[in-house]
Length: 114
Length: 310
Image (cartoon, rainbow over all chains, first blue to last red; front, side, top):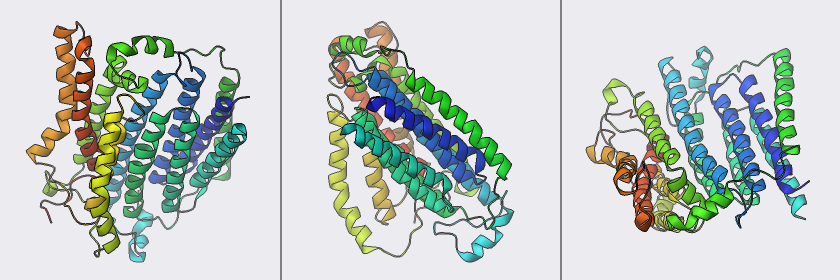
């Protein structure tokens, strides 16, 4: 077994872990986090494919590497939009929103959040 | 020796990812996620993909980390978190193990020799005038992906902005709630940006021949702008300003213009005439880095929530 295979197994486990978190958590922000962990695993998978395709004097196949760079930026954009939607939802459902950590009286009404 | 390092690194990534999933509080989970991202960047270095490692560290971890921390602080913590039942957890665990097992099988029984596009890239690389094959793929061989990705960034920003309340339409977002003046933060926000801007521009410039590029450089520029806003030295911009909007579309517009000109000068969309390919690529990237830095920052800052500047 070489390093690429080892890290490939790690990627497979990360995809499983992320998927598990996505399924069991009910808080939207935790789901988004789990989704990003899953994404990290998928990207590493691409990296392993790229590493195995090392040829022509390159240490890795540049095509999957470039696709992953695009993927990371798109994942960021999707995360930003998802978080904005979650924040707006919690705002619309009548919860006070502020830049400071939720203070005790703010936490009280939080149970009704949909 | 390197195998032992990779084994330890892989194990650490899994432990941190597991902790992020299992953490009680959303805030703690976000901190775990940032640690996970940094470790992932190390994995990318081990996979000889330094360009990706930089993108992961800068965008996947740095900018995403600020975004998540800000969201975790702004969403009230639910007092009673709905827990999935034991049965649901067990079924989910079994299904996820199956997915992992399937992927592990693919890794262990992958085709040999592995398929690779490295030889055609190496063959066509001299025509682009670039030395970094990843930049060549991003800007020349698969330029349409990169162009569409710029459009996706803009669409995400339009989506975020459209969530602003009517009274704040075209107004300014609040990246960070202004708190009491923090002298250390103010000091850092004065000392770091000159260095950071230089590093960001260097990473963009060196990306033509060495690891780096517009994404990584743009993320560093965005970080510098966010730092000055967090320290209260700069105000968030008004979303309705014509100049800001022009800068936001500068990247995709330049890309599209050069792309359409390709029909005339090189016979295909997004094709560059060989003698000018490097100049054109650098020109597109220069416009892109402005758009990337602005879009990343504004995506973190969220929808405008006040009509006027402070």
